[in-house]
Length: 125
Image (cartoon, rainbow, N blue to C red; front, top):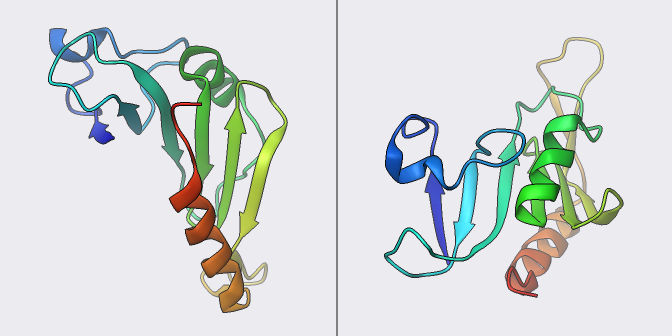
């Protein structure tokens, strides 16, 4: 699979067919094919670590357009498949509420579980 960033390409004719109902996600996951008609398998939307991770109209639009969405702020990873309910959620850390600059890390096993899930995530099904 190829991961392609479109922020700088958003106005180009090459990327116009990849724009979804909610605009351009941060990454679009495509079939490994050098063609404008490459199948779209899903997308990834990345937010800042202190951003709220509730489902938004943007994520709903991405689900409608791309079917599968990974939604993350780097600390919380949410996986969606064609519906609003989480397929899976992994929390590897959180922002300390007092100063908003310190991260409280979860046990390292959470990272391993996330990595294992990412390796097994099937964009095509």
